[in-house]
Image 1 (cartoon, helix red, strand yellow):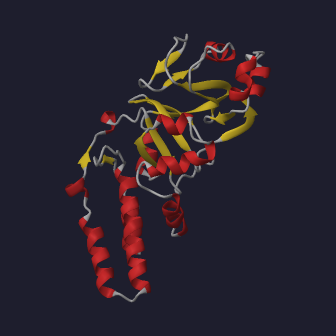
Image 2 (cartoon, one colour):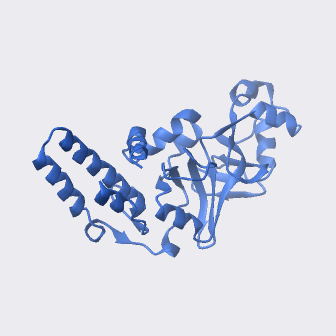
Length: 261
């Protein structure tokens, strides 16, 4: 286990290109370590020395020079990706979270947590900002929870939504997702003229230059291309598991690794 723990500690930033999935090498090697550890544990339980040797050989053969291509930090762009918090994530703001990255570059990164609901609903938010929902929208919109988007500017609202109408302060991330910071998007929702899909958060997540890359290198996050269905359509409590499944991972795999820490 000592050798595997050392292997899990690797944190150089690389990218694996497999079936369209992007992973930091630190997180990817961590997953490989989890798999190998389970193989070795299972072999030890069965007193199967041959299987144990094969598991160690499989781990030893999974080398970055064979399966990975290096990517320099300025080239890494995680816009329209999910960050999925690993058990190693020490920041309590982000434990167990999925973050949608709206913008990422040499200057830093900006994103919104999509699976950490506050005790506020859309109805209460609209009441506080003195907007009245159209009657036929109340049942559809009023009970939607407001997300804790991150620890930056927690006194302001930020909106992920499907693109369509033009708003005064908006960033179109992809043809399927936009990020708006101006009040006019909520005014449009109240009037029944808003985007088809919407997620409202209080606060956002922000990283300075190189900060996110450093957290990924320390195995704080898994990364994967985002799926708008998870953002806008799945219940909040199912988003973490659904994001992991984009990588072919079940949550118990990460829980198992946390138990070995």
